[in-house]
Image 1 (cartoon, rainbow, N blue to C red):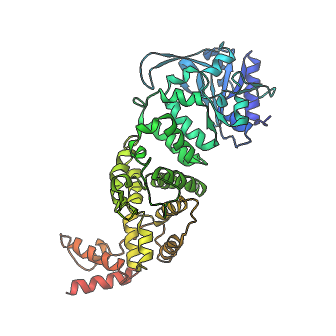
Image 2 (cartoon, rainbow, N blue to C red; image 1 turned 120 degrees about the horizontal axis):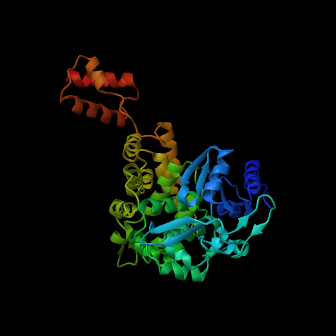
Image 3 (cartoon, rainbow, N blue to C red; image 1 turned 90 degrees about the horizontal axis):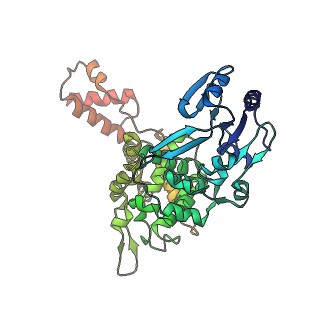
Length: 450
């Protein structure tokens, strides 16, 4: 069994001296059994009432009380959450319609049955190494099956989206009975911020996000994301897209993105959503020509509206939305600029529009790789990266070199004439007429002399 850190063993010994038993539960046990890195630990304490447990913990730790009424405590300075087994009673519809009570006398089978999936219901005693597995989660881990613990799964519909991101992370298949149960649940009352968290885990942790999309389709929950549902059976020209419809293409693109994540959470999130949404404009623009060709003219621009409506279902983060939308509406530009052998000015203007060319290149790269068995040609991406790097605009849009202070330094009084002068200087900068502050002020002098 996994070698647990000393601080966990110390905690378990402390609980044992008071007549209780501390068991590791949930993801930390699952990940340890899979030989994955364990970053934080959930400990359930049996046999001690909440007030006794809190007093015991405070003898050795600085305790942060999260849910004192039902016994949830965080230990400051340690990646450890301590709780009592919890009994939840459904009192109202919705994600928050529960009364939660700690029950330190709860039996192991009942405690396990209240968790989401059997692979998360395995308990481990850090002192003895014993595994307590009443729902045979170890067997499901071995064969790669995601299975719900009990019918109580239905009390929290967010678990459907947890299944979505779990299958993408562990590349498991979902048990048919779990798919059937998920199909009966609705997303209607889930808090948007919780929905976003599950999508983030799909994009940031999924090794094969396509499996998450497949699960959404199989259980029918894709209906809650109609912008994605529209991609199903949206045909593409097989000469350029032998992989199938836009849904299949998007799934392959997401897997390509996942293979190339860079480990920066925000950057990966923006690019991941950009890849997911990049072809949302195709259902509204796809036409079947008389000669058999299938085209989707202007689909990148038409993708803005469905991208905004899709993201609005779970976030109001303006910066995030705008950063994603700009990738969707410009994802054809690298190829267009390369084919035109565009000038440095055009590359600078693209950087001004998208903010970060490196993000755009990552979306285009995933797009090109999402067409199996067709090979991919990233020459346009390589060309754009080289041009942007040479112009020092890979990770930032060009900034105006000439600013209002330069006009003031030349004796100009502030007024409405400032803006057209500064705009003209910036246009000249983008055209390459100057590349430093000295050149900019010289150009400004020529404008003022006219």
